[in-house]
Image (tube, rainbow, N blue to C red; front, side, top):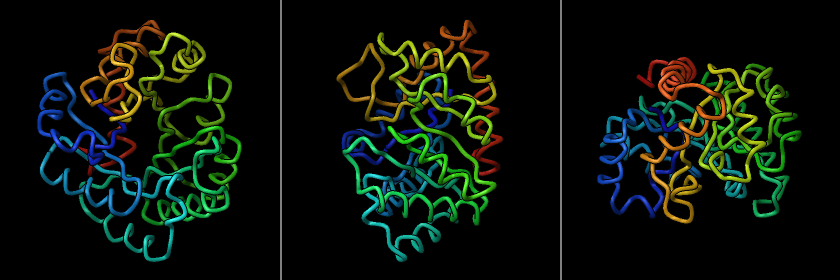
Length: 254
């Protein structure tokens, strides 16, 4: 299995990370993408990947931290992106929930990082919350950018909007919540080869662990929920997702 998005450098995971990753391996997780939220956390993620062969890294500035975006930060991301464990630029995006950085700062940081990803020929890992139309507008200004929409939350009607832009949709533990039937319909609507699952650990634990710390081993429960929504065997989806991530992230993923 693949955990397509986690934050292994988060303090809630860092203190017992070896045990967390041992449980992930025991559950059948073979790759984890650990995503940065700023330059410092991106560097921590790389350090973790250097110690743990199952981990790959996305480096970037999260919309919540967009006020920290500077030319120096851009140069720092460009510098760390050369590491062989770095496979994407992320977590980047826009969040209009009212709990993030000012919109202008988010747009500036997102646009700059989309351009950086295109220049480096790397995919992006995109955070979108209450901001689908704006995120797509900004993406459309950078032709050729590609990647995944992490923790997809927009429902079935927007699936095609992302797919026709060449983006893969990644579903988190929220797809297991009883009230999220629209999200399960979205998972059923996505083609098998444009679909991933993730934990977003330590956040968004699946229903059986809801309210607890999330961790990569729990991605099996999200995979099972998505497979059930689609009427497919989890093993079939697991094989397709391995091929999807290999194609999207390239030789460094292997």
